[in-house]
Image (cartoon, rainbow, N blue to C red; front, side):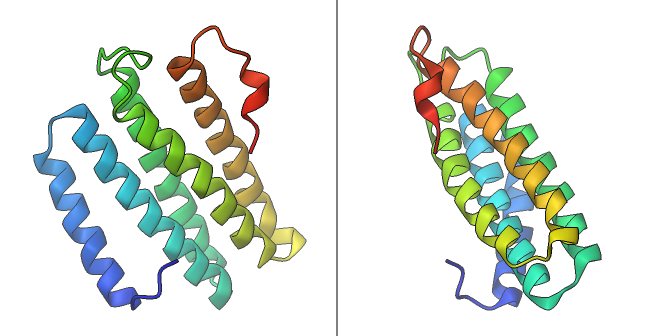
Length: 146
């Protein structure tokens, strides 16, 4: 997905971090967190392909924080996700795509190094399920698998 050079992605990452510091609107913050998390996935892929497992672990943790902060931002926003879905919906869609990309990264790794990615996929899937339940209260959440 990211064919642009790593240097450009790093500049975009720095700009997104700066924008996050300036943004107070929950939906806006969540969208910035989504951009940051997508860039972090691209960095995870770089690290996996290079066999740099220490850097991979750092990016996994940064991604975990970004996604959790995005979820917390929306959950604590006071918005009703069933009526005002902006932010919730974008995050759910992004996480669905992220699970696929994380699975692709996991396939690049040997069994010994795959566990942190598999744990992350489980966490992301749980957050996504939370969002779906909030967006569609009363509906059967078992039909939400990817």
